[in-house]
Image (spheres, rainbow, N blue to C red):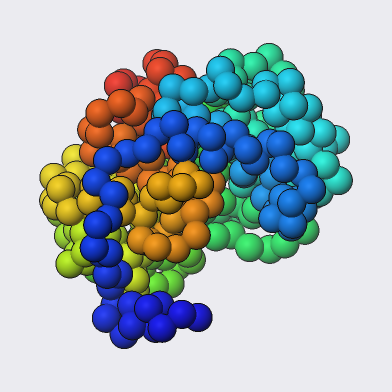
Length: 338
């Protein structure tokens, strides 16, 4: 760990470097993302096999935001997605990996972005998702592990919503479970009585929004918890006393956008924080200024800028982190579900 990183932890914030970038570098970011499909011999590529389908989603969504989707190798992407499909109807992280609800959602999002939902065996996917719902309404990520993290509830609901099959599960059950994870401070935890966390808030609010149940929370209390995550640097953190991270430019900001309180944070300083986290040589966006860039933080940095109305980026849907043009009438941003 560098001395600068140690000081950042002590300050509970990141330092904005002198001469930080103040403009978006779209061409650099597109090149950075596109190289990931052509670097199979790199150590990073080999070691990220367990994230392959998620990685495709991050990269495709980045390109869609940058209006560069046509530059992607569609045939290669479809081959990878089809290779991750399993007989149980779900998708694994990569070929030969067990099905998981997270990767199943990512596969459906990718094929929706590519306008190839015809490649989805809808009945099989629905069967897989339904099989993960538990008696208390929650969802496991995979049947082999008894873990009903609230992230998995959102993944299940989002997957079926995109396939227009939400009625196939016990919607009231999943909503009731999510509400059991609602805390006194306005946040949501991983499980009932767990600490509030911005990522879990995004998932739980997304679940409630998709099922038309946002009225079940105290909007102002939740918005206050989220708005308090902005640090003096302008960046957003996931929990009190934690460092800001570009990915929370999505989890926090999208949550605020869903409940109509996006204006509760300082837009100008957040934009500066995201732009300062770019790499002007290799492209991509890092977790914070002067760290190494990666596709994960790149997509959520771009998505955050899109939510903030940054010029040159396609509009993003705050629930599904997909462009509104890709979602069409499924977009929460343009037409809330009935």
